[in-house]
Length: 358
Image (tube, rainbow, N blue to C red; front, side, top):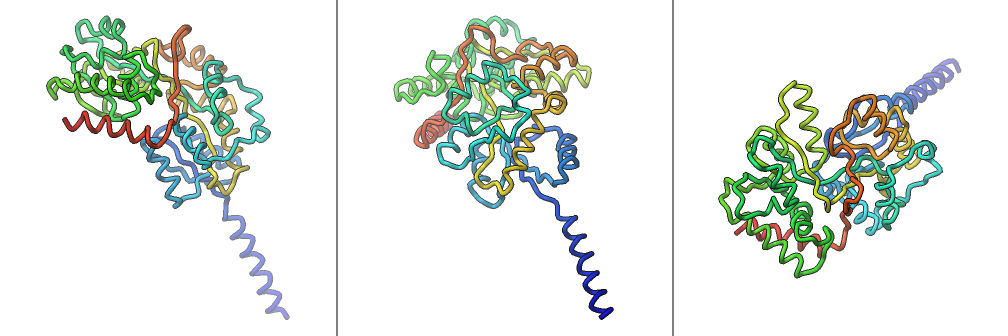
């Protein structure tokens, strides 16, 4: 009897130990260096969970990982056009706003709010950061500031230019910049307009290979170091270099210009249908909407927050009074990318591959 009792007690103790050690897991898929690790640890401690955090380098890589089905992701942070695509494909859950009490305490910038609320995919996302795509340039290059201000995105595609130019190795961004140079929508699906954009890219690539190059994350550093005179970059890339140079106490000899007609990007929290813990996923989003957390996170990331009060705190108390930190100047034309169709996406890929192979 004693032996049976002892075994029963041992089984109960082991059950309690195992039960206590098996924390809930939250699977998060995000861009690199796009969330303060200290805050992730704070969330883990506060909710007694383990956050399994995975990083990717592009929206397309994020999409592939989701569709592979190897991991049941609870949270992803894609850009607006990928939110559009995934929602059209019925791969996302609508956000339950009743589970986000902090959402009632924050005010999104009206410009960002209107952009996403007017879209069909607005119910599937909670905005995280936003910004523009524009031209980063080296201020030591003679006459470059005036040229960019006069020509806008067309400065990137001037076949007579002697500047060393970097284009983003992304069909959506480079073709989009060419379309905006021509005065067309960044979401154009018109064959004639796309052909004109292709011809524009071909014209600048007809120059010496030393004068035009494609790149991604390295473009911002090449401009800052003077290896390129100008490049197509995201506003966040520019700020990354500003903060890096300020920390190193180096001279900043580069700047950023967003033409009056440009793309405004919005990265956002979404909950995929793969989520096995939707309540905890909402807790995670709600946690990062809290003012103190949002301020610390935005300061660590360095991008522009969509929450107006957080932005004001960063500008006033953290001296984030940089030009271009607010991505929506009054009177400017800003468009968000849309997912048109798989055929449209393939056409953009084919277009850029064609001009690069010539």
